[in-house]
Amino acid sequence: MPSQNCGQTRWYESRNVRMIRAGKEKGMEAKEGFISRSRFTFYILLFGIAVLNGCGTPSTIQAPLPELPSKPVQHLRSEIETILDDALLASSHVGMKVVSLATGEVLYEKDADKLYHPASTMKLVTAATALVKLKPDYRFQTTLYIDRFEASGVLGNIYLKGRGDPVFTGADLEKLVDKLVGMGVKSVQGDIVVDETDFDTIRRGKGWMWDDGPFGGYFSHLSALTINHNSVLVRMSPGRGIGDSVQASIEPATEYMTIINEATTVDSPEDARLDIERQSKPIEANILTIRGSMKMGEAEKRLRVDVVDPALYCGTLLKEILAQKGVSLQGTVRHGELPNDVTEIANHISPPLSRIVWEMNKSSDNLTAELLLKTIGAQMEGTPGTAEKGRQAINEFLNEIGLDTTGYVFADGSGVSRYNLVTASMLTALLVYMFRNFAVMPEYLASLPIAGVDGTLKWRMKEMRAARVLRAKTGTMRGVTTLAGYTMTGDGERLAFAVLMSHYTGSANPRRALQDGIGDVLTQFSRKEKWDSAK
Image 1 (cartoon, one colour):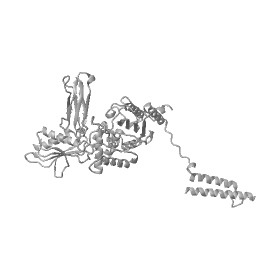
Image 2: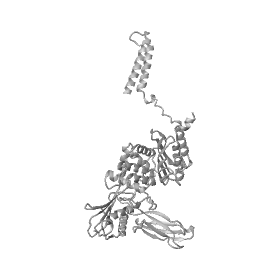
Image 3: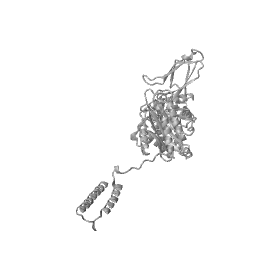
Image 4: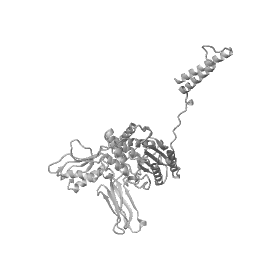
């Protein structure tokens, strides 16, 4: 052991020193068998050097000096620091990391291992797990069954089973009904039974806030049987004359949503203001009240409104489509579970997962992300799919690729929850892995919004070098704005990056402008141009 060797060396030195001193006191000359003083000193020096090299303590070993970044990298870091030094961020927090996909070199980092709310960059994690674990060609199914059919065209019960398809629409449902009507069905004596048991019935993500409202389609209720984004489109326009009621309608036209219209048409623009409220007390209900007014000649207003209990909404639309095609229903629309002794009549198969992930990330769709989370849970851990099972599958996936998930918190699949906590280092490590995983990289990369072109980046970086080059997922919630993805430098070097900003007041737009500036600096980065010309 090193400590023993070092101790032996000290003993050897002291013994020989004593021998030299004893020889001097007696006036002895060096004889054969003894070490002369000069030769002894020489050997001791050689031995000491060997010992220092072989068993020195940490205080005696010089660690290699870290490699200094090249001048282009130093300049890049300086440009980024200049942007981050903006007064807008003086009281805010910023976590950032930039990594070369070719070499793994960290070109820049700032508080990269501190925790931040990811907002919708959480969808990068959900999408990655879905593509790797479910595969890009995975498809959802929504199936129509019956339990009894008589030659006279009378049915018993109709069963509609959902398995989490986030893009199932009324048009898709009508195609299923057409298969049923084509059999000669005239009436349904039983019920329409909607089966959403592939998932649990928890309608919102963990940590979603009580005031995440029903308008805009951002916080739709969750169900394994989903249709039309679990919402209706409300259309409002002025009446024909002053004092007339505002014209209000919903798409699709359905009895499932009741509208109480108290709004009127006015002449003065100062008086024109609409207030819309969906009943929330004593319980949530599909009752929409419109108050206020619209000005004569004002353009139509459109607003997407979430429905309560999406499975019953889907069953109600099924009943209404049957009625339009001349098929009556004697029973009701109700929840239930598919029995064993049923016959499959029609099956709708969704587009591939690659397309669904594309739609989710381009528009930053929360409903799709949450349904994917539960689907991952159902497929990896068994039905019913739950957010908890989905989070467990995400953690297992990240551990498999070398990320220690004990340092992060995942609450939902969309990033709406403020319980989510990630680091810039984690996001960039995931981006690096996905870029190098050719089995899913094309679909993953294609799903990200392109600067100045589409999705949530359509209006950002349009006049910058980053336009049409940088691809990234955005994220926004109150006091948080994030951007994470890929870009290519002026030399063709590909980079992965994450910028997480939080703890600010006011609009996110000025901070987004700073992120755009960083994205542009990364896209213009060159390791040679400026420096070659300076030689």
